[in-house]
Image 1 (cartoon, one colour):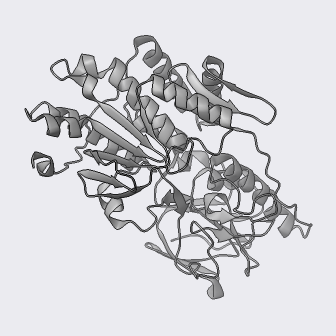
Image 2 (tube, rainbow, N blue to C red; image 1 turned 90 degrees about the vertical axis):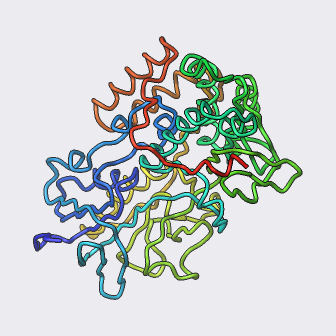
Length: 430
């Protein structure tokens, strides 16, 4: 990897998500050598991926160069690499660009879409966890409408304009709301020769309510907002298969659609060498102690979505969201400095700052520790929080200007097919 030798301890960080960037900031200009590895050269602000998928934002407004994040950090090195294996006995990682020894290793690989072993759904559905996946989904949505113009068969046209979203967490709810607004304000103008009133948006949830991690009031209000926008919500319904044309469920309701978006769950990103059955817990997460130290290892730590810190208050670990990841990264950065100074470590304590979701224009729900609110004010709070946590002044300004423009003009300028998804539509002609 061409990393210079040093007398300082070498800390290797795998992953530059919220957790990885947070710990990197905590180690800025300390007496350590830090090597940050990621398969992309940018950090992605994942909460706004759905806006890239629906043409509200361009991808560069929610991505930030990693090298710019660590600019001016002493003894910091970034390498574009895919980590293939961890050799714990040798204190070495193996990547596609070579091997590297470490004194301390931090695993912050984040999460990926969890298909729960359903290979058919994995092959035929659309995920939305990365920028390339969001661009694929954006292209497919637009291509479906272009294709709908070319057919005189009603069943085929309806399938092309039928959208099914599986999973009613924040991602599914926000995507459903965005698609509903596109149906209302943009499609009639872009496709005057299509009966866009026939566009259907289905949100499927296996449980008995949407946004199950939020309060019942927030859940019910979000449901009211979505139904007001024309979204059809199917609760207590589990999707069992999707062959690229028909969505099957465990009820007597099936769906004909060209677009199934899978937002029903995530799991930790595994790395060979730490994938033993006795090491990984539910959701492919690595069990860690109160200091984020991987159990059974003295110099390996895991933070963020891939880590599972089981306590009496969190028997399933902390939520796989940005806030726990950033807080764990900050805490571990401080603890590594304490460790090198032979000082006692501080256990991690999660401070829940609340959760929120937007359902569309002037519609959002916010649950904070001592207060819950919905509607227009919640929508402004949601926007402010997301702007605040974006990395980079330019990104904040670009997103803000886009939001103001979209709000005033009721438009989404980024509805572009930059790279075609090239889906095979022959099945819908049967």
